[in-house]
Length: 597
Ligand code: AGP
Image (tube, rainbow, N blue to C red; front, top):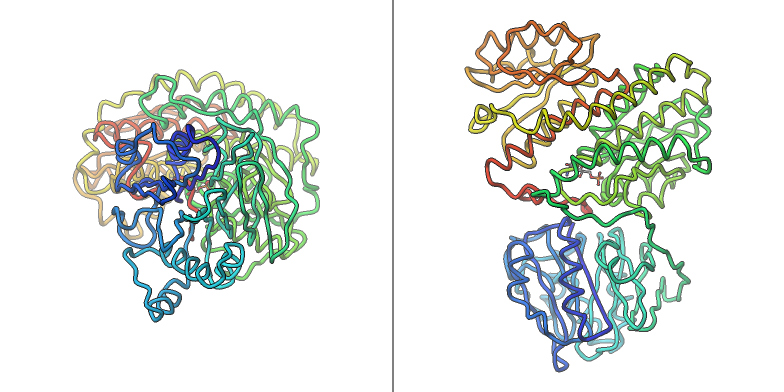
């Protein structure tokens, strides 16, 4: 959440770098945006509520300044208005922040008792006021930073500068990502390397409790008062920068990326020799920990392990796992799933598991992300940059990786039979063959007006179809704002069916041949109560059934079926949002990388 960017270097470039960086970071939040820079030795601030384009209209791109900071916000404290927008200034210091200061009330009270007053509702302003107060006392930025970091609790990635020092940017980090991009005679700071990758491929990753002083030719990073040596990282070239390529939005484009992503991913993991694989034989338990769509991908993974490996897998929301007793030991493998690799809830769990010396594996997209550095094994999703807040290709590649891991796991345990390998090869071949035509078939649903304006949509399914229902329902909610819920098909009759009335849309997903007849009975129950039933099933099953609409998906076999079955729902959500004229890539209240708890 919140994207932060900083630049020191060429006076012709500063404004351009800040705005470009913010554009690349807009996925992290888009309630408001702002920049600060030095003009004639004075801090200048421009802040606007609303999306980044509101700020862009107010900034003169020809402005000459050698140093600046910028921010795109996802509000945590205080309304998304101009006053609460970052940067925040107190005295000589101006800063942008990503994170949450948990003891802001106590700190604010202390500062107010000293006569300091506040204009915004933000925790960031308290941070800046504290830093400025410390600077006034010590007259030394490093000491002021050390004092401030010792006082604040919570999470922060901070970039700031001092009006009297046009030679340096200052940075601090705890629990929120922060990187320094290293150029020739220029330096960049950002929450994500996407912000500066156009300008430099070299970067340094800050670790928790580190802080630094950045000049245009050198950087110095410290921890506990001592300078620390940092490794210079080089951007992975396979992590390609994305653009819309003629599509009307990133979500639509990223759905169409899926075939290529899957082809590359499966080929890569089938052929790569150096890829480090855990000793799967050592485990008697798997726990999957994730949030949102990544959790839903984990639900599909759990199902795959149950049905093919007959192996029990536990799955937990990261936000819950963190606060419960960890029932894991040296025979447990904890699998963390995250597109961004920066989700705060997931990161906290990974830290806890690391401290307990329990083996962990990450399914993650962003190279060198915090999660990838915390776990023992990393399976990169290799999906390329995903910019739409609603994940599509990310989710599909997570499922593909569960298939990869299942295959490796069963091979290690000598339970992957010749017949399973045939199923895998045949399923993969069919899946890659039918996926393109699927896009065409599901690009236009003529009946979407029947679901828009209804107070509620239900998604039902059993087993992996239930896992898919969870994701289909979330996708519809997040981009179209239509109310919807997913249920295990057999559960509806235990209470929720009371909400079904004439015209209530019920999406029944029934691609699991073992439970098809049972789900069919459940959908007849809702049909009998007037529901508008949309059945999704396979082209190979008997479709003689009285429902309102059908979505027929090609049968590619149980292993790869979830990858095909979710496609119509990803496209449906996109179509509904488009017909409602919504900002599909930036749904209200959301951010792509949820770096607060
Ligand atoms: C997906 O469409 C959502 N935007 C959201 O649920 C997301 O999957 C979740 O926040 C987890 O993110 P991560 O994969 O980056 O950890």
